[in-house]
Length: 102
Image (cartoon, rainbow, N blue to C red; front, side, top):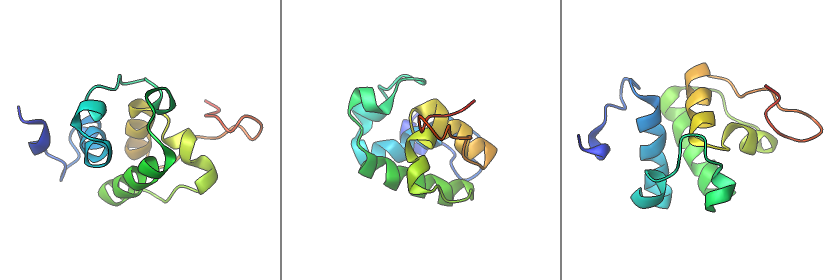
């Protein structure tokens, strides 16, 4: 299967959509090499790239926009982005740590 020709119109595979959008910003090698739960911070993905990816995913999945302060809660890993576009809402954020409160 060609990783660039996944069905993103119906969002049948949210992980494929997330990885495709990431690849558009950071390249195939990094986007498809990141572990599902691996932290973007640990692999050097910066917040500017993540802001662009999240904005595109929000358009793709028609979810509400993320407040700037919530970026790292929503976009800390592939799994968190998959959950975000699947749920249609950002995870609750702990006000002290700024991390996902789930």
